[in-house]
Image (cartoon, rainbow, N blue to C red; front, side, top):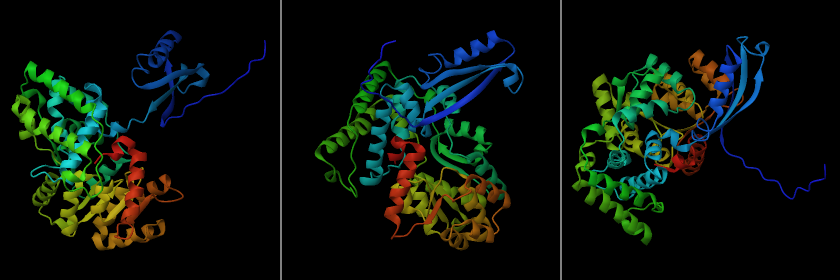
Length: 426
């Protein structure tokens, strides 16, 4: 064999999840079919993962003493999978990822910069509904899709199960009811203790003409460059000329064109649980339970939680930013940066036993030594020390002095945990 000169080499690296799986069967024919089908093009490439057969195993090499195979799978960490609605848009609308991102940025402009009267943060979920209808998405599809695309941060189920044992617990979410119902089934949480965006796609009529026009508009929005929101922008004039044009065009679409259609009912009738609606949900909860706002521990992460944070904090309750963006950190009293939700269970345990003042004192000296002194639940402490034997996740009191640095740290950590695209969204 003659020598071959290699001029250059090339490699790519991607952030993703890798796993090895052992599959066994009663006979080699069944095994080969299962192994080949699960790693073939329809299953992996189209399914946005990559897979292959590492090796076949003899009965002596498998746990159940049957013939087997080791399969390898790699899947991209899709940042939008933590945002069920963005994933819906991506899968059912052409260029849906860009479409969703642009509407979400427009939502931030209206809610946080221009403070449009009567507009709630998180109304992206309202604005995209006419387009879901145009592309034929049904309630049953949303339910099925939601049940198959729930991604939770580690230990979320255990945390919710624990908090339910020690205190009345609620989920207040901007997400559609389809997603929250699916979530509740997975984590064994009572749906009656949730507040979310109620919507019935099937009940709203749409004409063929509206469908075609909305599809054209969807692609127009998807092709728009992302709006750049200047720091401290308060008026339209604070934006660049090109972004002012984009905002005015989106105003025309959502407050001029769509309201004249049958599907305009989505914009008038659907109430998204974000912004002031989350604060209203907190008021309803304390009324239902007969408690005071100072008894509330609220955990949030985005612009949709700002009003709830303000309500809880100013009335003596405790507001926690968990992997929050700048909007959340600015309004919270404590910032948590963690890849496990178990920290939430720890803070809840402290809050229930010690109250707000002492809890803040413990968190200001966040360490295993301090947690041991304050009689943290033993099972929680054991789980925490197993997860983090060397150093605890970051938990810090938010002050005027450290706020900007915490915003930068939390925003960067949020992108790391949730993915860059969703990390940037409000």
